[in-house]
Image (cartoon, rainbow over the protein chains, first blue to last red):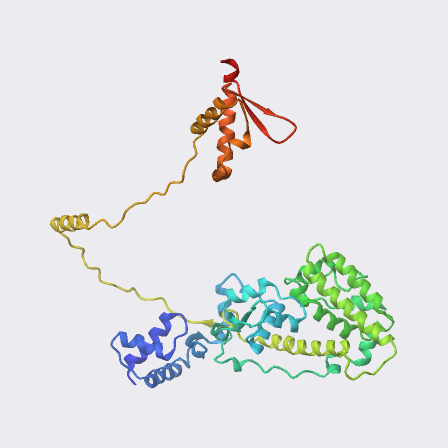
Length: 189
Length: 265
């Protein structure tokens, strides 16, 4: 394998600071006069991966392409680099994004139907600002409500390639398993 | 019985701090309202909680007791968050409906609308699925929290800057060329007809030289609109100030302009 090509791919990944697709890598190389097949670039990536085996780096294939990452085992070492902790995501927001992820595209009303509470504009906005969701259309219903879908960035941020990499949605649990025994409910009310 | 369960309730920590002040007669501390959506995830959650945790001790707790507590809660909330208060109200009403259905003799009608109890259970089950999966997603490795991306500082990128060379003659030639371009732009000024107070004074004086008195409204021209009214009014005031006319207003709204010049001359 051409060492120059491997290094050029590595340089691009390091320099981009964002995920790159193989096709993107190819066109960048081409602009620099390096002609390579997609399969060659894939080989370069594999080569780099084995090169990194002994290091703290890894190459991750995610929704938006390939990204250089620091192996997760080093995360505890890194956290002290920053004073600020990344903001926690509330339970409510996690539920909202989960419903969007599994049932997309959904309207705000669909989410509300499942969660049983109104979904605040703020929580939708915060997911939009995070680029985890996008408006993918408008439902053909009164008021033409916006339909929300998850983005590639959502998958990127969770180190996933496809939406199917999400954990399986559990089957509906029997009423008595979640503690809703018929008798209990009668007694409860 | 009720109180013992109250103290056993585990309230999630709020913004990293444990919630300590829990009133004995409330299911939820009233000041948890704002955080309710975040930590309790709202009434569905709360209801689950109630049903799950209270199923043993709630035996002698009747629905009115629950609704009372809900209403009490609503009283705390309605000042702050109406939407949420409404949610709880629906919940309380649903519970009341279920209870009343259970107390009435059972009549079996196949095609009757869905039993609210089973509908409620269905919703709770559906919600439970997403709730539990959201907990799994929450612990998935997340960028900048559990793992970090790698990048490197870019090297100095030298882009050759070509010297900008131009002669005096070229500069002059370019300037002359620009000057000689045909002027394709013309300015238009759009005026709107101005109504002059001075002119109006003359008009009013003209009218008053023919007849001694005229009502204000008669001096107006409909086409001049509101602007005309203002100008005419200003003109009248001007004339009155200078002593040329007398402004008279009777009990009606109408103002009359009476010439003083005619009286003196």
